[in-house]
Length: 231
Ligand SMILES: Nc1ncnc2c1ncn2[C@@H]1O[C@H](COP(=O)(O)OP(=O)(O)OP(=O)(O)O)[C@@H](O)[C@H]1O
Ligand SMILES: [Mg+2]
Figure 1 (cartoon, helix red, strand yellow):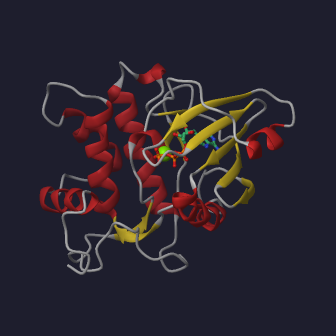
Figure 2: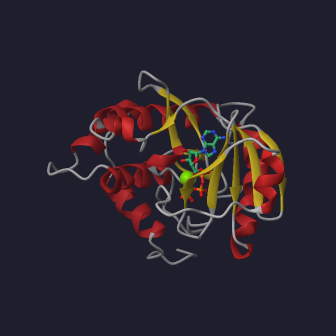
């Protein structure tokens, strides 16, 4: 989950898609997947064989969600790779916001509120995110969750306002606290600060909700795999 520090070999599929345009690796995830940016406004995510199913799951979710909210357009996909058009904006963990966690926190909260308000639960063809236990407590509010609401998956515009979401492979119906618990936790990973919970509060303020301490704790345990799958 970082910017690659060492040179990353360019896979054949990326070279083929780039067709002579310059390519650079912009992100490496913890599964060994790498995201490449192709000059001219395109991205290609390439995952190792053991994780290819995660990309296959992302394709229909991006196509469905895009009808309601800003997420990348799928240009093409195949086994272990996903080619999208660039969604304008800069990740909430882009260096330009490194000393402005308040900007990132507000945009992430605003973005999740927009997502939860925009996506119709009744029409959602996707079940709950993979890490959410079937026996989760009764929902505060059932919404279509992003499913991986970590800071890098929210994009901001030049002014620091929410502009879109990426990385929708685990999108599905769940309590809104499945996203809010992880989004607030992820802020601490990406913007470590001395003050307890200050930026988390900004995120929840921008979303428009008061912290639900029990549900936050429950979904963080579930994310860590510490809640039984059947509840
Ligand atoms: N279509 C796009 N438009 C703009 N930025 C993009 C696009 N696709 C990917 N990115 C950028 O690349 C980064 C990595 O993409 P993404 O989050 O989809 O990959 P991932 O490997 O699944 O991430 P994770 O580490 O969360 O598993 C994003 O945080 C975003 O900054
Ligand atoms: Mg991501």
